[in-house]
Image 1 (tube, one colour):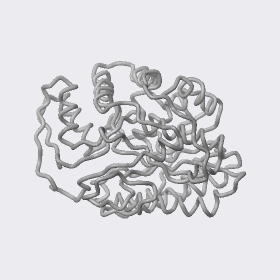
Image 2 (tube, helix red, strand yellow):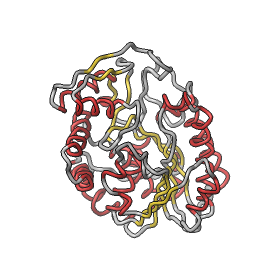
Image 3 (spheres, helix red, strand yellow):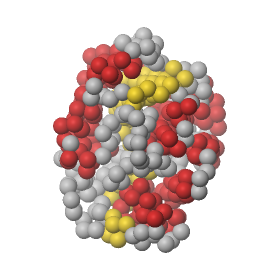
Image 4 (cartoon, rainbow, N blue to C red):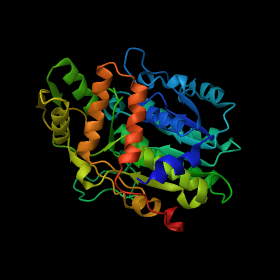
Length: 377
């Protein structure tokens, strides 16, 4: 991306601004909160405390010492409102969620409560913020009704749906966002509401259960073999900083242009980033040191998960000027470097900030001016 994107444009958009990030103790939310703080924003985070016996990005980069860290559970409306009572943010990024497909089979009602009702509760809180300019709700590529034999990526106009509780919860969350946008966030002079859908995000600091990268890294560090389920399934893999750059760019565009940039947005990788689980595992093995032994399980074992997923990112490319910046090999290398540094006892705040700076400075494709059109909504 252009120099203006990292060092001038976003700094101007966010420096000194009050920003609320929900889910900041999670993987993506932690990276976003750190990046916003690095841009000079005054960040408040509302989330659950990290799991006490599990590593976390939040703990690794000592994020609690940089931002206003508040604890609340989306399932507890009174607790949530108390945590947000004095927050008057100019930007809201909602990332708090139950983020695991396989976990959703174990706690389907709770997944819906967190991801659907929790989203509505956050938007109710957002409605009461006098200074709010932009609210972005982050959902998932799995919000779309999945058609397994589809040969092109899902577009923002495609039908919402889901065959499993997690996917259904994300499709429902998108419907909630759309209804709130029309009912409460449609004024030309008021705040704008958008939703953002990323692909399968990888990067340092994710230790979630039943996720490919954490399982591979844990096995590599322990020098144990790892079993990969559904090795032939394809996913749109991308480094965590790719969609986060899209969210920041979208928020800054809303700040300048308002409702023209409301609506739903895909921030998925280019076609070369859509590869099988087995291929990604092999790339991680190669980047680590080649000694990781990966065993492939039987496709379709366990609860149903989509066999093929891809996102069409043309809307973000054409109307926002956003483009994926890293090759898949670069994304995996950056991910492996982070975990290797963590295992070696490095200062992970400095490692993460250096990766943010490298992402900005080494990006090859500059952003282009946004196209002014009401079709963006």
